[in-house]
Image (tube, rainbow, N blue to C red; front, side, top):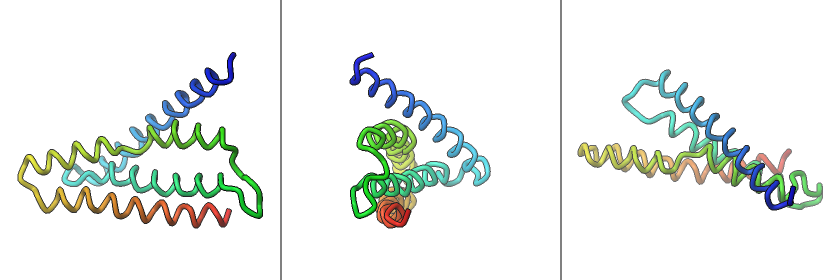
Length: 131
């Protein structure tokens, strides 16, 4: 099989795993938290940001050498993490809040996930460097 086709199939398989993980985790969290706040989406977006930072830091070369190859990084970040995080769901849920006139909740939802997601990436990068 050509290397490009192999890479595409691996990214697709990782994406399928990421989608299933997102579905399972966000559904579980949402069932436990109740329907009043999209905590399932929050959970996967913040955890996804943290994991992205960890993987990115582990893939960067430093005095320890590269811990994750460029090939594995693409498969994990584009495949698994691309399917695991749920920005489109964040956008939809925020739009629903706006449609329902819940302006403060919509701002807290979008702003909170962006700010916490950015913070999680930086924390993840710091953790990844420690590993």
